[in-house]
Image (cartoon, rainbow, N blue to C red; front, side):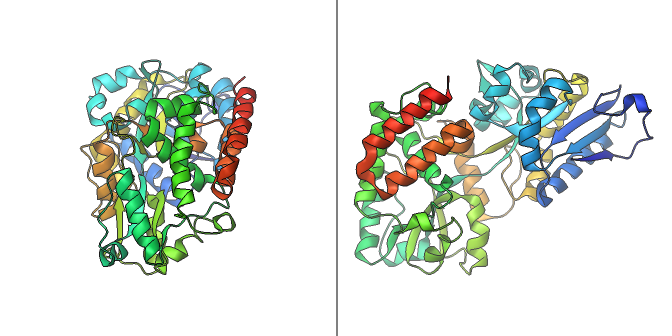
Length: 411
């Protein structure tokens, strides 16, 4: 863990060493140690201190793994005034344990129910808001525009069109969907979209909270939709041997046409030589027209711990963080999307497409299977998804195994 004081303050007396706050001191714990997030937070804190010269920020910076193992301890024993985390079910354990403070007043006083509306559902538990989101990035379908155009394929908007597109690609010797499931989570992204489109956001969240049996017929309906694609041979062969990066190669080489993936795939695709004229993005198509379209967009957030000592300045910081201009600057550095609908987005066609899609979503925003489900359930679930992709005839056994895990994990 590293500590920063921005600007550097006069050394505190020995009695004040630690994370105990004094008047005008705001203690922030984050795991934003990678270069871009670190730079974004340095600028964020400096900007806040410039507007609030009476407040000195003490920033405790952890590495990712150290933060995950430390957060419950410091929230309980020696809470900072602010801590970063994630939206949706990922924050649920800390809400349920009484370790996060509701911040509905910050949302109401700063018009955030309107400006941050796209992420409001993922910040709400028991009718209350539990933090402020500041960045996310879209998932969806990245595709070879030139291959679609060459074979007369229109961008699919529904399930029948999606399957027809895949059939046309197969007839022309092109694998419809590349994927690498060596590290499991990519299969989790496919499951999430199929389930969100088959059953909707509320069902998906209930499933990942452990409230729905994996043997439920609605889960089976999701898996049967997936099986249609598997039986048709739509996915890259031997995908379990490839990482997500290795599965980019068939797409670059024109041997595969689509990838259900997050926006972080764009940079390596560009670096591998694909131009923006060759590469496109579309929203995962409708399966059930009665289900509002929800999206996958992992969302980073900041929270006030219930045991924070300086909640007054913490709320000022959250209000600052939520501002359109502030989120514009943070996300320029991160190369991601601001939540505030009035923020500006870099002149990048994929970020612009993501902003348009996420800002208009009415069905909710999921955080990704391994964030929305507890770690043990996520591991068993994603192992099951990978196995299903290889051996779809094992569906009954896989769902029964996931159900046993659900009963164990959520006790």
